[in-house]
Image 1: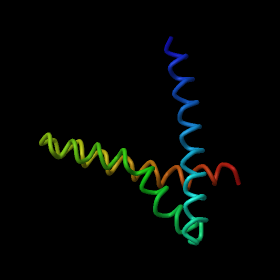
Image 2 (image 1 turned 90 degrees about the horizontal axis):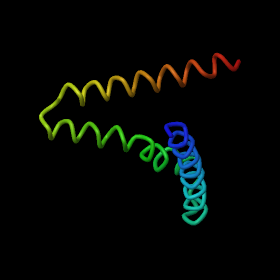
Image 3 (image 1 turned 180 degrees about the vertical axis):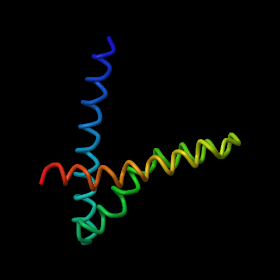
Image 4 (image 1 turned 30 degrees about the horizontal axis):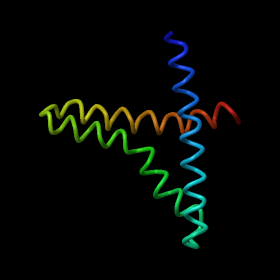
Length: 90
């Protein structure tokens, strides 16, 4: 049953990511703004929103260590993956 949930979650993640990208491109076309500008703002916020909500929730629950760990861990993973995956591909 765990594999069914994992597969279903992956399918939903792929469909939601596709919808986010198509929506951002559609918005950029309607506004007449370059797609790069829209992707650097809306898509960046969409991918950072979960970390933001977790950090705010942790701060409201008086657990600043969780908020700080979330920020440090998220930024470290983003930097290492953005630098590491292209290095492996190249």
